[in-house]
Image (cartoon, one colour):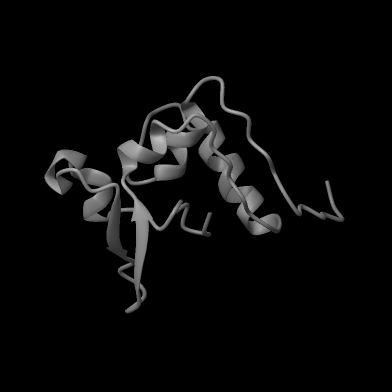
Length: 104
């Protein structure tokens, strides 16, 4: 998870977040790109990720914990914050790894 809330190389306000996965045909892995970076990335499609039996979200540090907590507190579904999709799904075990915070 990034500081902008992107998850699995699916970035806020990206075409991959807003489009229906049917445009990708039978592909389960797609090319993605952040508007802030020139480098290309790959990701599973949004529907493939959300249909997974188990989802794990990894992040490290207080800034990312703040992003995570902000997304958890949202009361409406925001497509441009893909992380929110993960948080609102029922029965998903979330593992917060490597959070070594010195403050409360």
